[in-house]
Image (cartoon, rainbow, N blue to C red):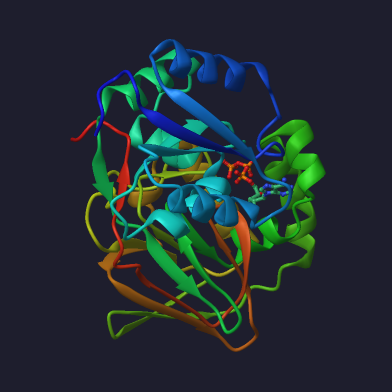
Length: 300
Ligand SMILES: Nc1ncnc2c1ncn2[C@@H]1O[C@H](COP(=O)(O)OP(=O)(O)OP(=O)(O)O)[C@@H](O)[C@H]1O
């Protein structure tokens, strides 16, 4: 790692992430340059493009830090390419929920975010991999199966850009009418459980700053598997309220187990989301990606 001056940084910007505020990004870039970094900016043109740009940046010898400027979806796309390499990756939180950035204590203030990257700090996280019958996708924070994924599948991206996280609340009403609850068969490392909603999480947080469970597993392999055992919209709403209060772990009908290899099946396929973006439908298999990611964060 080069010192503060002379660092070569490449920023991959998703211009559609979050509320599309440009000023914080400009300040972040200015702070990196003021700290002596050479900065190259690449802007995505479509979903999936961050992966292509990350490959391009990785191929350009001598890049010290490849920075994803966006939300969890953009971070996951860049991580998909950088996981398993020695490349250091930075994050500038510019999405709607920015769950990973909150989870890992990455500063939102442009100057502080730049200072962290310039400091050379680095720690390893262990992403997950989710696969349905058509897609395989690396994820950094969580996968949701059932009602929450139905909300994500129905979320108009324009609405999310206009009102941020409130878009999820508005979309929830439509999902409540549309979603048909069904029993999910959840195999965790070979043991079968039954549930009506499942979140497979690397972290403690969900949907922003809401606490799903009190200990995360970002810095090790494995997941917390959070299962709602009661069927129906009322139970799901009750879990939503418990989430707002940080009391999910105390619910009598929520079971939390730890595992490395999870499969979810349903008689009628239900939606699956990863890091707040659509993956597909069940059946889905979630396991350790087995490829560590070296992030510009303070080590614990
Ligand atoms: N130029 C682009 N046009 C349209 N979609 C894009 C573009 N660049 C990236 N995307 C897609 O936008 C999706 C959402 O981006 P991202 O998750 O970073 O922002 P967000 O949804 O606002 O934030 P968060 O996930 O933190 O709520 C990503 O999955 C990515 O594939």
